[in-house]
Image 1 (cartoon, rainbow, N blue to C red):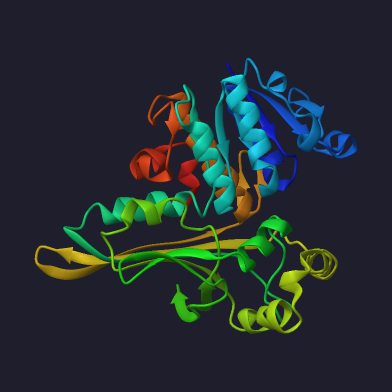
Image 2: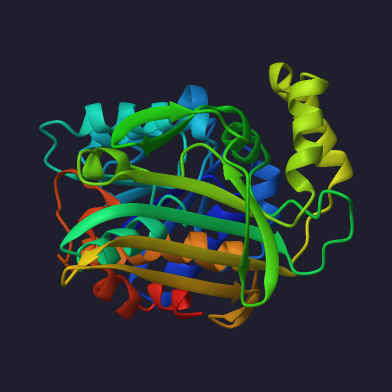
Length: 357
C-alpha cells in the first residue's frame, strides 16, 4: 500500500484524500493548518489528519517515507511544499495554475531522482493532455484553442457565477498576464482580453483570456502553431461586470477587497457543471481540417457520495496521474509535463474516466 500525503484540506484536498483512501491502494495523511477544520471533515477515520502550518512548519521530515505528496494548497505555498518534497526525495504533484510557481517547481526538478508533476488538474491538466493528443494526429498545425468553464448549472445573479473552487486562484487567473502564441510567437497577453462568444451543446457562453490554463503547451508548440490560447468560459455578461470591478474600481490593485466581496456575496453551490471545448486546426492529408473535443460534465455521485463537477474533474485528474505514476505509465523522475501523459491511458484510468462525460 502506497503512503501518500495530501497537503491542503479544502474542498478539493479533502476530495483527493477521500478518493485515494476509497481505492484501498493508498494510505493517506491529510495536512492542513486548521486543526478544527481537519477534525470536522466527514472522512474515513483511517485517513490520518495532521495539523501543520504549511508556510512556517512543513519540512522534509513531514514527508519522508511517503511515495508522493499531492498539493491542493493555495498557489502561494507551492514553492514551500515542492521544496520539502525535493528534500525528502518523494514524488510531487500539484494543481497550481500559477506560472511563476510552476517555474520554481521546474527548477527543483532539475536532476531530481523523483518526479515533479505540476498542474495536474482540469486546466492546466486534462485539457493539456487532450490538446496534445489531438494535435499529434495532424501533419502540421495552425491553431490550438482551449476553452474551459466551471459554472453553476442554475445561475441566479448578474455575474452568472457561484464560487466553485479557490477564490484566491480565481482572482489570480483574472489578473495575471496570460501566456499565448500569437502569429507564431510566444507572448504574454492581458487577462480579460480576447473576448469571444461560443456555443456548446446549445448553450451560449462568452470566453476571455485568463492566466495559467496552458501549462507548458506554449513551450511545447512554439514554432509549430500560428495561434495557441486558453480562455475561460462564463455565461454572457460576466466579463463586462468583472472589468468594472477590476479596472474601473481598480480592485485588481486591492485583491483582499475583491476576495472579501466574492466570499461574502457569491454563494457556493453543489449544482455545478464543467464545460470543456478543445479545438485543433491544421493540415491533414493536404487539407485544412479541424478536430474538437467537447465535454459537459455535471455534478454526480462518484465512489458512493455526491460530488461537484469541479471536485470530479480536479481531484479526479490528479488522482489519475498519481495512479499512472504508481503503475509506471509516466516518467518517474525529473520534470513531467501534462503532455507526457497519454490520453488513452488517462481516460482508461478509474479516475480519469470521469472525463468521458
